[in-house]
Length: 231
Image (cartoon, rainbow, N blue to C red; front, side, top):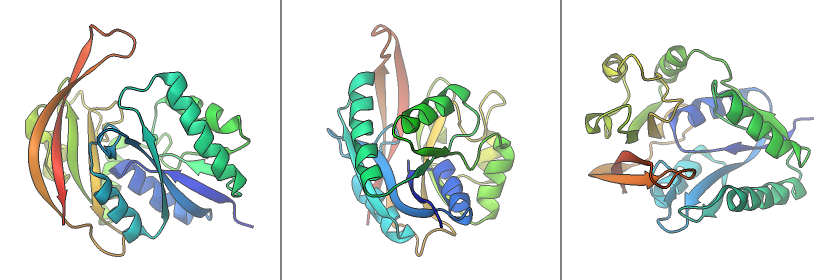
């Protein structure tokens, strides 16, 4: 009997490819779980509008669980909100959850621990894959994605708003992970083999925002965002 599962969905390319593989692994996927900013109604860190997230889930054909978080929630608050959602999912018979992480060991262990507290299995379909090979596979499978956020520490604003293709890969600096696994950039997937139809949108304005470091308020990080307008 197939295990009932949820997928931790960010709307980006690693999520899309991991979901594609997770679907092939025989799990019975009931939900896409996504965290959003309660203040802005946008996907956490990606800045993508709620309406586009909902269009993604509709095209994929899996129910969406939206988890709204305060813009600057502390770790304890974040964990309490997520734990409550996971508990609700377990009550509905969910036995496992999948994530698109590739090689960050501490993040993987954190997720394993959080799900383990409720007796849920954590699955990582892309784990220990080669980032460049993963990105090439993503493109070869016919997925289409656009860069919606870049960390200025790694990439300048010219990268935000670009469609990921071979040209994009060639332009990435050598110190940047091909999949942006260290938070270098984030994406929005709008078409591919898991979609019944493309998600329509137009490209809006580019904006710049700074965020304080949770551990040290004097440290700030700058990000460029590209707004996507739903059609």
